[in-house]
Image (cartoon, rainbow, N blue to C red; front, side):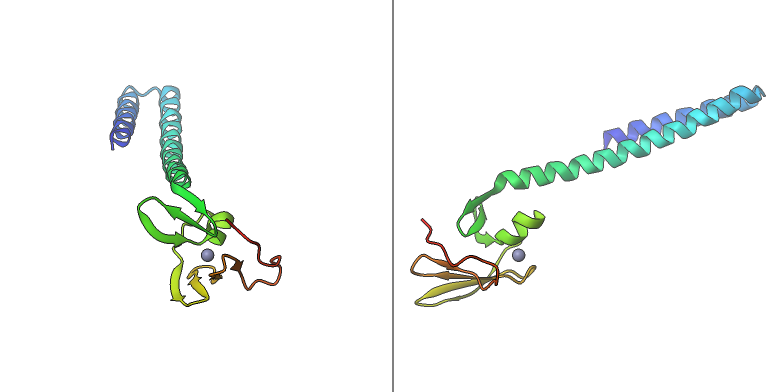
Length: 140
Ligand SMILES: [Zn+2]
């Protein structure tokens, strides 16, 4: 990665300057150069951390743009397996639900992560076995 090579160059350069200043035996100047050197290390570390955080946020943003809600699940283009809406909406985790069965009256999917069971009734009503959920609502 280019930025890391540049950072290494700056650190090497600062170290060489510190060594040169050490040779001319100016203690005050030497102390200042050493401080400068440790400030540079701090900046390089901050920069690396911010770069990593920024990469993570970009990945999250890209994922967010890819997820499309088609009730009751989330989907990604080119991927027919639905994603758990509970995991996505509460934790931004893209977790595939697992197909359990397709009966005459209903299709069932389970989330392996949050363990939510999704029972999709064939009369186009969604029922979730959660105590606090309102009664199933018509959709479409
Ligand atoms: Zn889940």
